[in-house]
Length: 414
Image 1: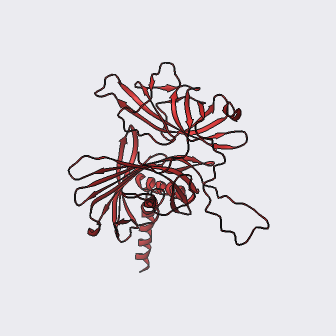
Image 2: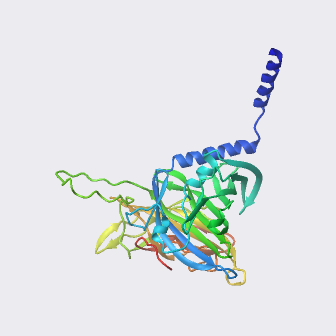
Image 3: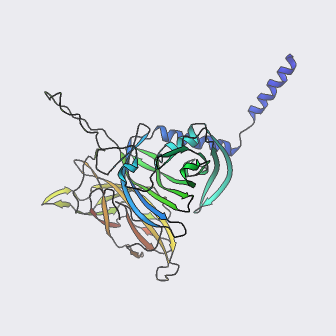
């Protein structure tokens, strides 16, 4: 028996010595990156803008309404509130009279696919998406192992999932996650449910963290009705708990309400702010890239300087899309560029920057125009979108955008 055992052990050792295929090593590194992103995700809040669409059976998909909520990720949970409110709820439908909403977009789906060891993953090769090389993997999760629960009109059920994800084959950053519900309980009256989430890295505090940039949730009913929620996440920032110290207070006093995200400072609405880029920005920039600007001219209110000239402004490139004029030859080729400035560093405080873009400054050799021009780019609260004509562009350092500060929006019909 000993020689046979020795041969068996030698054979196993030989197998272990074989190098793993590159796609297996890449998957391990993608998993490790997602694990690190989820575990290091700080308590943070974002503004969640949900454009909801509805398609009756046999008709076209049309806009239904727009919901704007604040989402808080804390302790592995997602909570929702009207922006600026301190009353957090676990169910986003608390703020809606009807329609469809979802949760789990921050981390729960990532945990199911990458961390809980319940998914079967198969490498499908590399694809070129928007000129970028991406590694694609397909996955499936059985209904028994899935934690994906669907609720509808008093009925609920757990579904299986099947989908794909795409990642950078060199940096192993996750780009996109798509999945479809399977084995849907018949009492839910759905023919299909699908979700697609795009990710990028966002500066939260002193770290770049992986967060959803946008997502699409689609459902198809057994009667032919369809719904689409297009969700965008903007103005993400670290969540801070507020505390106060008092002496001799009445013990019977009511407990303080749950603290809301600490805005170290805010600007009153209606103030004009001009921001100039500190470094050039061109068509090679990656969406999600951090950008820096500076305030041009003092921001005044009632004769008092609120923000001095030259104050640093931090933000990111929200969107960069290339389009052709198509049926309108006057447009030609152009880019839709969206900037999201987040914070002004004033001498005495960090100020949340939430404003509407009013105009853009001139740049040599570049023609620009404001206004929506039949593109997929949607107007988002606090995000400034403008359009640059040409097949290439470069915005120089000093390029100006003119903004008017605004209050945080609340859930509303458009």
